[in-house]
Image 1: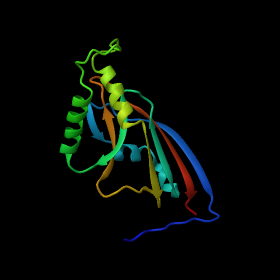
Image 2: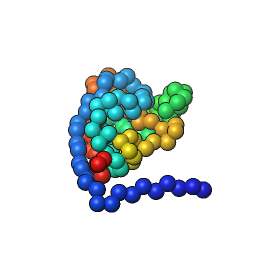
Image 3: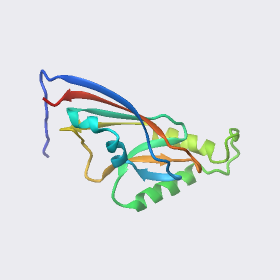
Image 4: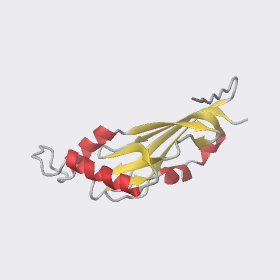
Length: 154
């Protein structure tokens, strides 16, 4: 078993925060890693740190998952639809039959991710990507608050 250790002592630290809007996506699971990074050129200023992403909606979620095979995203959508189907007798129905299941799916998957930053890049596994899990049939663009903190490059 090998391990990697990075340490920065007495480095200048920094914080950065921005709210970004993702492009409108249809219902399903979508890889948004490149879209997020395109809106965060400041990440390149960090040598080591953390990138925290929080979606500002209760009917969509973020996930860190498979970034290669699109069938994984299709299978996830199929599973989530079986887990929280639209045809149950929900009390909360004012916003349409897809709304309450969307809240359930969002609660199960989560609203935030924290990803390490190493040498100005997200330190993701080989097959990992950031997913926007859109649970509504007709959603608008989704907003994400991104917070970066860590040791800045010299």
